[in-house]
Length: 100
Image (cartoon, rainbow, N blue to C red; front, side, top):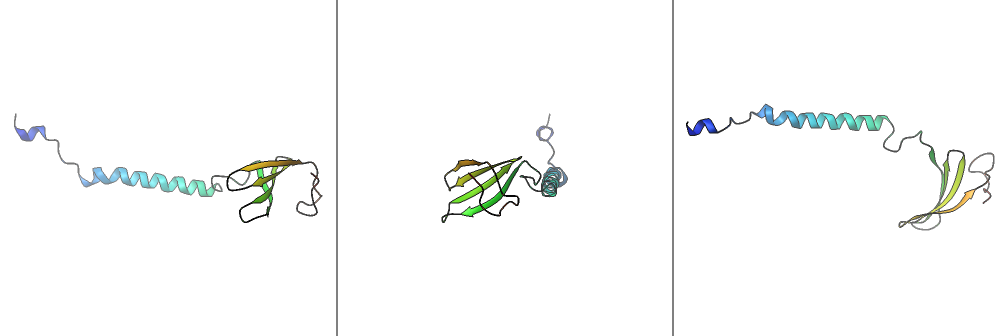
């Protein structure tokens, strides 16, 4: 046996680039599908942010609708806290004050 028969043949440039191209095409298709469906959060989910009221530089009150129920939450950079379940809203959301 000669020393040359133990060395595998060098891969061609097609063998090196084909997997890279396949990964890039797969990533592009996945990105397109995510954008087409409205992002990662989705627009048709059960959780909706009805209104945001800033109360400080980084603090906010959030009125959140989950299904047919509403929740008032406080948001800071460190946490989100449930303040109260909102029992009744005016006929038009965003008009008047909800009763807590």
